[in-house]
Image (cartoon, rainbow, N blue to C red; front, top):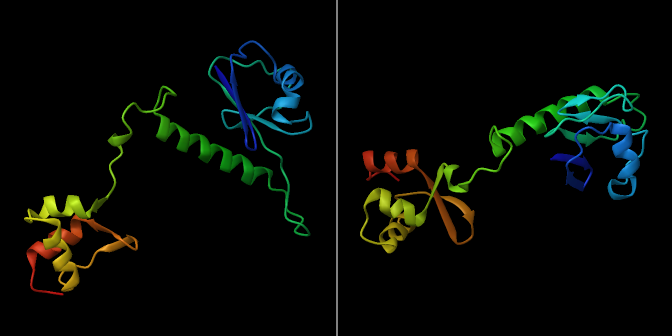
Length: 165
């Protein structure tokens, strides 16, 4: 399968063996992309769309290159670097074989919820933790008005010196 992206539009089809020019003609209406818009395959700009033949698994991203009004800057190099960074991030998130990680929980948050903090500190109840917070012996990070977050370092510091504010 190949993934084609232009702006918010993304499609996935098996397009191995077709040129970029053929793909553009076939999916012009779906992607709303024209032949004048540069194509990047796996982060590298395609020089000749009529000669470049897609292989299985390659990703095509169309990027409309523009500059800042009045700046005289051409942002093509910056756009290419940004495209490469996006591909690296996708690889890090999706894993090496291009499939989404089976277990999203394998990505562990550095923050502990109030419930996890109670367990970590071995307190008898959630109310005990709230009491420490109210007495300002433990200062949580605020995720929202009613939700406390903690780091392991914060909780370890509290355990080392529980009398400090």
